[in-house]
Length: 288
Image (tube, rainbow, N blue to C red; front, side, top):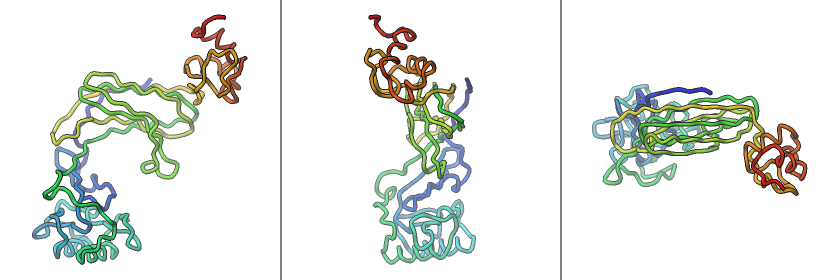
C-alpha cells in the first residue's frame, strides 16, 4: 500500500499560461496566491481600455491592436499567447498554441459583429461573477494487468476525489471517469473498484468548495492495488445453486476466491459448479 500525507493549496499556477483551458469562449487569468479565474467573454474581446490585458465586454480597436501586438510577440502583462490564441488553421475554434493570421482575421471578423465560434453570452460584465478554480492534485498509477484499486482520502476540508482512466489517444482529453466520491472534513472517502489493464489511471483530490476565498488544507491519501479479475464483482447471485449464467458474482471477495480456483467462472459464466464452490469456500451462502 502506498500512503502519503500532503497539503493542498489553492494555487500551483504561476502565470496565465498555466490557466489557459483551451476554450476560445473564455478568458483565463492567473490570480497570484489564489488560482485560476475564468470568465466567459465575447468572442474576440481580448483587451480593455488602453490595451490592458483582459476583456472589457466589447470588441473594439484595442482588441485588434492587442492581437497584432501578440503576432509580433508583444503582450500586455500579464497576458500571454494563450490569452490571444482564439483560432486555429482555417479559422477553427481551437487554438493552435501561437498567434497567427487566423487569430487576426478572427478578431477582425468579431470587430464587424461576426462570432465565428458561436460563443454564449459573456458573463463577468454586468452579469454573473467570474468562475474561480482551485488546484486539483493528480496522481498517476500505471497498471500492467487487470487490478483492484482501493483509493482512500481524508481531508480537513470538503473534498472530492476520483479515479480516472487515461485516454488511448490523449491522456488528458480522452479520459474516462471510473469512480468518484466526496466527503466532509475528517470523513474517510473510499473508492474500491476493479479496473482493466494494461492502462494508466489518475487518482485525484480536490476541494468541493470553489468559492472566492483564499485557503489551504491538508489531506491524507493511500492507494492499494493488486492483480484482480476485473469482472469481479459481477452482476449475478453468488449462491444460486443453479448459477447465474453471467461471468462472476456480486460479492467481490467470493467472486475472486472462486475465480482463482476456477477461472471459467469469470471467463465464461457462473454455473452450478461455481455456485457449489461458493457454497464451500465463501462462507456467505446459506448451507443446504
